[in-house]
Image (cartoon, rainbow, N blue to C red; front, side, top):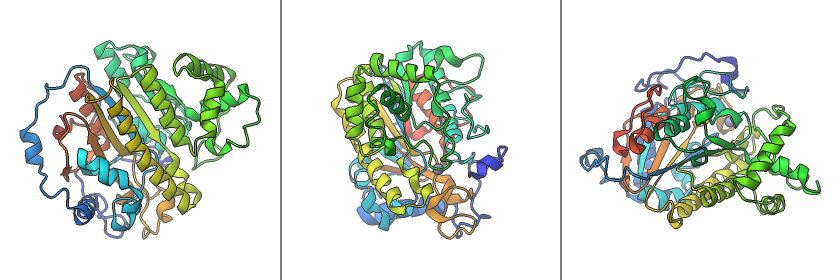
Length: 410
Ligand SMILES: [Zn+2]
């Protein structure tokens, strides 16, 4: 079980603190992880040495592409460590990120998550721009307004313009907050592919249930955390399948049969949403890699390789769709990392329990028409900076977010 489950009021660290100095991560600090990450990239590809943050700021032109911008955010739920990604021994697992996407974007080597390291509460913190402290294992709306509510309220956008595609464990409430000035009138629609599949299977013949069970596993940390879907929840999902995604149950089940994993199904749903609704603000969480909790290293690595491929596929989808091409910013960021091998408080790649620097220090890659290419930035930023940054770029205020606009991305 998560440390967060025991410590719901875990005190966040301030960004800029040299986190890790006092933690048993083999001497790792957020900044040493960041410099290692930069070093790995330089030594293998030599592609980032000329980049400079000063150069990025010099060409800062905030209004140039302001109208009609779209934003797609991908989080990795569970995160992956540098050993399996950016380090020399891990680079074979992320060829698309390294060779296709990084050269087209700005890469931040040091993104600190100073909040609770549980997936739902951490993702909720990313979408509110504030460190939320509620119990990770209870589905509930975040107390602070979400990015989606800020966006819809300020720009008077319809419900069809913003969507979340997420794993099922508690994420059904992530679209809107309990803040009385926002809430349901401004929330994002949430599509849970596993719930959708389970509802579709009940409609179908049932013959597929065993065959598709690998796509239905809800939570890799607490297999017993299975909230039974209410009948009206099934109805809601089936209605979305028909009215929003324009898919029949039979077509959707056929697609599920052809999918290796839940993340593939999520990307398929993203594609369908983009075609049918062209949302301007879309959040997608890839969660396969959290199978690491089961202890199966090879499955964890497979999931990283898949996420790498799916990110490139998503960028290609964006670039080949006239509604999205040349007007979309894609942000890719793990929600947090995983524990270090030599941390006696953890069990290596398997979990994210120790709160050590490796589990807290992740990265961000941004791509888009206004984003400088082939730039790497080492200064520390925070996972809660994403919401203000999207607000600054798309032109709406995010007053209760605690993070700051990332100037290099404006
Ligand atoms: Zn996890």
